[in-house]
Length: 115
Length: 113
Image 1 (cartoon, rainbow over the protein chains, first blue to last red):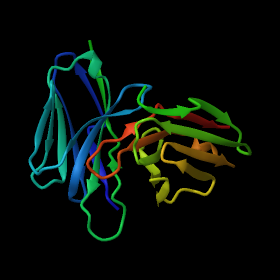
Image 2: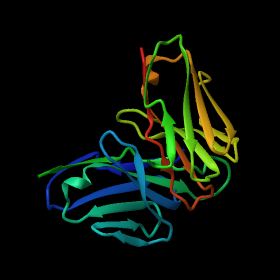
Image 3: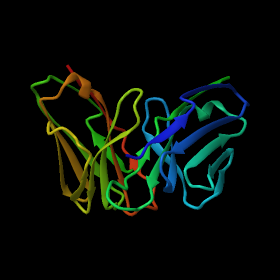
């Protein structure tokens, strides 16, 4: 079945440093979504990428979808303590034959920000 | 509030108990989902309902039994659980289709003793 790998598993950064998490799929994706889960909270939808090579920005967050639509990244510029949490990618595979087309989540990258 | 409400927030149950988790969404969404979140594991999809019809059962043991009486309500009935079933159970909803993100509830933290 489809697998979505996310690295790193953990990242500790000094406040003000940049942060990047990477997501790789074993299959070509039709789209990819990113979620943030604060400690003790629930996943919150951040964004969806659909097009090959797509780049979207939300303030200090930059999301990229690879040209082959098998990988994606989330980059945070100048981290703040409010960025603390676990960032998940979730990919949906291209419709082709049998099998689930539901989102497959990565394990997430847990970000800690040292003030 | 996210628009997806889950109750109870915490639940401790013995292995012989029967309990139910409830999820209600006020967003007018057509699809609802049950996910299991365990430590060091990715979010695991359990069940999917579209327009209150079950469209996916992700090889979930029969001790978990979903029920979706209408598009706004989703239940997860629990019976004879094992300690390894202890986890955060998350309900989510979406408008349906593949172009939308999911709205998650706050989850039920389940402990099986």
